[in-house]
Length: 231
Image (cartoon, rainbow, N blue to C red; front, side):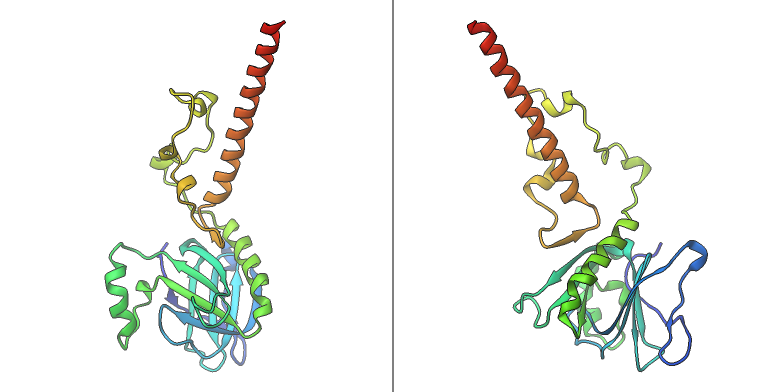
């Protein structure tokens, strides 16, 4: 899979047309939203077009130019969130972060955005601005549903490091407790206003709940032992 944003002009039908989906691999359309402006990085918004959300990717197509369209796979979206803060962006929008192929994009992105020929593979931020802000929550829910259909793949070499099944001995630790360094997302949660494709918030919440339950049970057992000894 190629990470990042790309041009998309595969349309079918009359007029503005609709995007061609990969039906052979089970891709299906989930939501269509007309009247959506498309903003790449710090560039000016594109003329409003139509947003298509499938089970595999997000596609934006211009309604007036059949040669203008963009697509990004859900596996390339590391985060999406609803933004209504005018200090962050003047219009309410869906804000997304896009993973790219290498770690050198930060120094190169500004150059690519200011150049006449836009290097889509360097774009790390995308905003989708619907003409009707009341559609933001619906769009966000669809994004979340499709992101869950496309979980971040785990390398076989990293399976041990991403194993969320933890034994009681591991939870107790040598010193009777867990260190924050063992679970860095406790100290630095991935995102509080949107959805991160690693599901770290969910995993962290479930794990923390399990830890709290076990500590509560240990405390109850200690109180019970004390009652018996007093008798």
